[in-house]
Length: 364
Image (cartoon, rainbow, N blue to C red; front, side, top):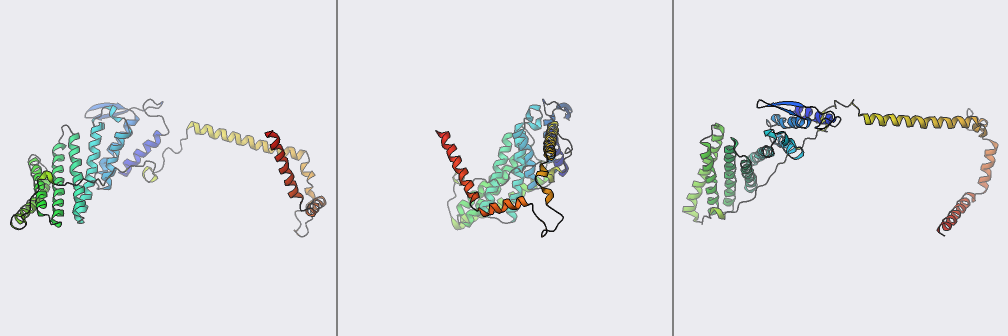
């Protein structure tokens, strides 16, 4: 899985450096053989194909990986125009189906954990109702497929689980007639699933349906007896039942190809675009020009005996600070400036007045 994700990330890094997509100057054709038919596609199809098939590794794990597995299908459907390549797997309805199936499987993980942890009946019912509805939606997307029966079975099973939980909630609320009505709806779901299972050869699926059927049958039979002999409550019609809305607790987890933990070291880090090389060359040239200009100015000042005029030779740097003597002219100017402490503020004030006069003359 990590290798597949890294390969995809490196493809995107390569795509950002080279115009390899359809119509680009470096367009690269890729030959694919699907069902013994040869296809010649561009780079876009290639990295879409890699992203698509990376989920083959992820479906072996649960919850988080199911959500990650849904992302490639969602991304290809929403962000690429891969359907134009006439590959059946890239059809929009197929990608929607795969996205919903993997998200549904992630939701199944939450449902199982909720049942094990004995969470509130209403919470479990909402999770199961979403699964019932999402598998119905998956069935509607498929026109004809072997998955049709499985989607119907799963929809009925999770519908039955939701009704069982709502029946348990009614039991806690001491609404025994309502409890029985929910169990009856659960029994309808299970009977439908049992009928569909007759044509299915998967043993584990039949065992799961039979297990749910045993639970529903026992609860319905007990609720019927208790209501007949003890409670005598009115049993609401099935169309009068309040069915809560399903809650989706999963989403496709995005793969960030720029994450170093996913992409690893950039294999193309040594390749610098020509535009960048030209910019670096221009910068180096301008830097050299500036350096030459500064050196020329320094040399000119040296020739004009500028350093001599500063009388730096009168400052003996090698002497200690106590013995060091400054030029007499510098000391005189310092003493004169110190004897007139208001000279600098007066200068600033005069400059301010000049600026005001200039500003007013401009306005007039």
